[in-house]
Every structure is written in C-alpha cells, then in structure tokens.
Image 1 (cartoon, rainbow, N blue to C red):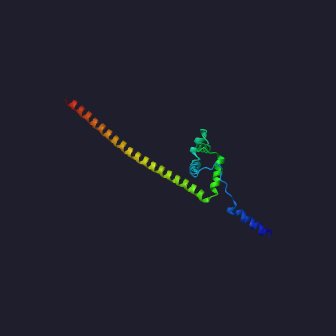
Image 2: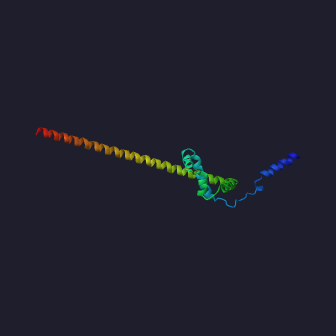
Image 3: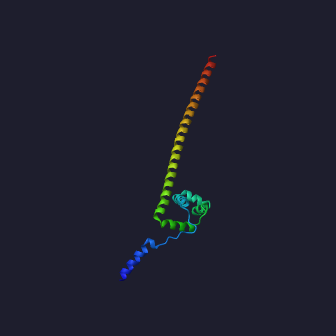
Length: 154
C-alpha cells in the first residue's frame, strides 16, 4: 500500500499539468532574450584576452550586458527559468542564438577573406612599384654612366 501511494505521488508530482508556470512580472521578451543570451555566449567564448581586457578596465561583462539591455540578474534568471519550462520556446531561443552566431562567424570569415585578398593585391602592387623604381634607378645609372663616358671622350 505504501508503495502504491508513493508511485501515485511520483506520477502526480511529475505531471506537467499539475505545475502552473508562473509568468514573471517583468518577463524579458523573446527577442531581447535571444540578444542577451547571444552576447553572454560571446562573452563566455572570449574568456581569454577580451574578457581580461574588459575586466582590467573595470567592466564586468555580465553587468555590462544587464545594463545595456536594462535588465537585472534576477529578471534574467526568472525569465530564463520561465522559457526553460517550455522546451519548444527555449529551443527556439537557443536555435536563434546559434543561427546568429553562425551568421556572424560567416561575416567574420568573409571579411578575413576580403582582407587577405586586399593584402595580396596590395603586395603585388608594391612589388610592381618596386620593380618600376628599380628599373628607373638602373636606367638613371645607365644614363649617368653614358654621360660620364661621353664626357671622357670629349
């Protein structure tokens, strides 16, 4: 009998319908939540150099993000908990963050590629300019030598 009561208790306690999801008063909007989590992800990824540079200049990344989006840590925690209770919404948020990260990664890779092409093009231009300068120097040396020869003959 005790086992049966225990099993019934577990079934009812695990029943999702029995839980009422409380919407926080100051719930962070879905779009803002994506932006906040995106920036927090970037900060967490850049734990090395960028984070230490920020902290050395008196900027605590999480506080900076909270101030930027005009939210506080409790509001974020409650909103995060609310969204995590609905797996579909939570996955939607994180898939949006992932998509945003991939887009920005591609933009960064594209800009690096453009930079490399510009550098290669500029290197070729500099090499051509140097060849032209060297050929002009050689030509001017030939002119000077020929003038010197003419002076010696005269």
